Image 1 (tube, one colour):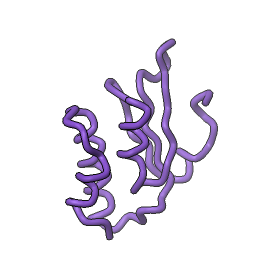
Image 2: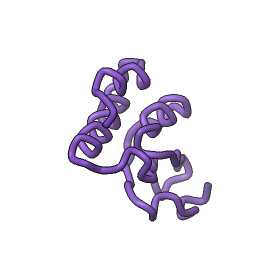
Image 3: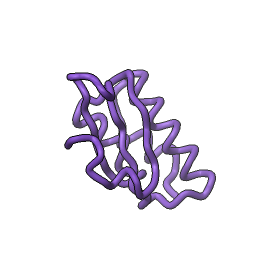
Length: 88
């Protein structure tokens, strides 16, 4: 299990959407989901500005921050998120 202070440290920044991703990830891992589960964040889906980041659940907050993923967005968790369904 990954501790909450560790997750806070890897996210950094103060953007509200980054903390929303962090909160979702923390909740899933705390509830027993494997930290190695594939996950994705899809920003502005179905628009010309659509962007997607795919990572393991534990690395998703860091990757989303690195790629500056913003809102609106949706988090997809599970094996389906590892597929190339987003045109990336």
